[in-house]
Each structure stands twice: as C-alpha cells, then as structure tokens.
Image (cartoon, rainbow, N blue to C red):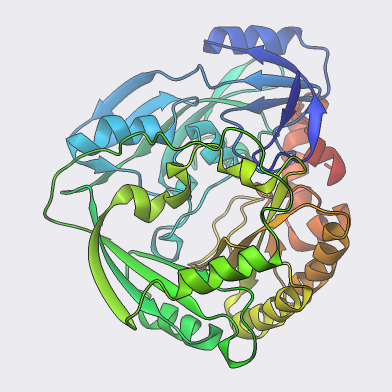
Length: 434
C-alpha cells in the first residue's frame, strides 16, 4: 500500500501489518527477516519517520490497564490516542500533562517523538511525566524500562522515533483540573523583540504560544499575537466535540500562494483590535485549533507540504529569529501557520528536540525551489547552535542532523547493543545515517 506522513511528502510503498496484542507484536518480531521495519500509530509525524518497507500498525493496541484516581496515574496500551484520553478523563477532572498541537496522536507516538507543548518552559516534554514503558525489542523479548530500570534504553526510546523497538504500553500521570476551560490572555505585539520580551515577562504562565506574521517586514518584522493560558477553576468538565468540518480532496496548488497567505496573515493579526484581551475558552480551540478541520493537510495540494520547526538557544533567539524571518519575508514564501514557543531546559533523552530557547514552526508548500531554500535556513540554524525537530522533518541532511544532535552516537550505541539497528529502520533513519 502507498503511505505518507501528515505532510503527504514523501510517499512510499509499504507492507502494513496490523497488530492487536502484545503477544502478536512479540511473535511478529521474532519471525521477521526485515531490516526495514518501523512502528506507526496515527501517522501524524509530518515526513518519513514512520515510513519503511514494513509498517507495524499499532493503533489497535488501544486498551486501558489501570487508573488510580487518587494520583492520576494511568497505564494504557501505546495505541490509545490523546483524543481518547481527553474524551474519557476530562469529564472526570483530568487533563494531559503535556500535549502537542493535535490530539490525534497515540501515546506511543508521543513518547517516540518526545512531544512538547505550550508549557515546556515549566513542565518539559511528555516523556518527563512517563513513569515506565513496556518495549518489544528486535528479538521479540518484552522488557520494562524507566528512568531507573534500563535507563539508557528509556532515554533512547523517548524521542527515538521508533528506532529502538515497539512501545507497547506506558504508565504516566495525568494532571488534575477543575474545568475544561482555559483562561486566555492575549497580547498584540508590534515586532519580534516585543514578543520575546513578553515571553520573558510572563514566563510564570503555565501555557504560552505566539502566532507570528512571518511576512511582515521592517519595524513590523515578527509582529505577533501572544496567547497565555491557565486552567480555569470554574466551569463544566465537558470534553471536546468531534468536528464535522472536512477537506474532502486535495485543493488546487494555486490556492495557497504568497497573496492568499499575506492576506490571511494581515487579517489574522488584525482580528484582535486591542493590545490586550481576555476570554474563557474551551481547551479544544486553545490547544488544537486545526483539529476542527479534518484532513486540513489537503489544503496544500497533491504535492504536499513540510513543516520546518527549529529551536535556537535563548541567547541567540532575537538575532537568529530575526535573520530567519528576514529570509522568509524576502523569499515571499510565508506560512499561514507560524507558531513560536519558549522552551525550558533540555532533558536527558538522546534525540529529544527541545533545548532552552525559542522554537518556531512554519508550514511550507512543497515546490521545486523549496528544499534549496530550506538548506539555506539550515545553515543559519546551525550557525546559532540550533536544530530541527525530527518529527516534522522530511529532508534534513545527515550532516545537519549529526552536527546538531551531539548524542546521536550514544543513541546508536544503545540501538546496536539491543539489536535494534538490524530491524528498526525508517526512510528517515536511513537518510540521516542511522
């Protein structure tokens, strides 16, 4: 069958094996002769990290084992989605400790990508709330790993993009809440410098994220809408409702062009008329604004798109981001989705993306000139000591990867020790020299 990531680029022919139990995973691995197998959940990684000759489809490993209402500790299979967790536990007064910008990811995928959210500056990545993992090794053996049990395997698996084994089950803690509402405060900034100043000023806020007009120039470069959030203490514990909006087919390639993107950016920036505004909003539009449109990736047309997400150290944030935004504005490419967040300290996972500083994520429609342009941005990111997010990557070079992830050799040593390099390989891992 033909598969792709969320960006619809690249596509690859793959044999998909659906598994429904830990025993079946173990048996399949014990029998496999393939050196090009990778686990896959809901397929929300953007590029080729969940593409290989053989795909192990884990989304049917979606059952729950245990929940302790006194602590919020939950054990579930890796195919359980964040959407399912929210549907079940928000009405009971619990929320995810960390969530990315979509709820349509599995627990296993969240661990493999070591996902971060709008609260990384305070609460780190999702893996930092994971107590233990059950992992199926290349041999089919199932072992437990945690920060204290097989810690090297735990730190390789969290952020390891499925390259150490098949995550079967995880135990982690949910966050107690009193309401499904978020108390949001939003600030309209004049430029990037003011935006970064406000991030620093409000670093005690639980959640923070900024949308950037990436086509503005001059003294308006990096003008933004910064949105802060706190869990409300009053309001109903009502889970999200499933949206009926859908993009049924790939849109014409001409739909998203520099004129339509520039018009959107201008309108979106001016939708807030005041410098400072407040409102109570359900968690769905605050955390998952794009989940309200199913298959929104089709807006980019049949050629697909890639999300370019990078992080720069805090001390290089203003200068580096300014340089990159100038390049983007000059290229006229733009992105109607440009999201800026602040990161806290890095964790111990070998291939985890976040490091203390600022991260910017931009969506670019794929065309013949895009990748050479992104290579130019890569050089700027490296010049400032930054790196790219593997979960969003579809084209990073081996040189860029190995220069920006200094613990890649430690990661590879762990893979080799457990025989994972002989079985678990994706198109991405081959491209990056793993």
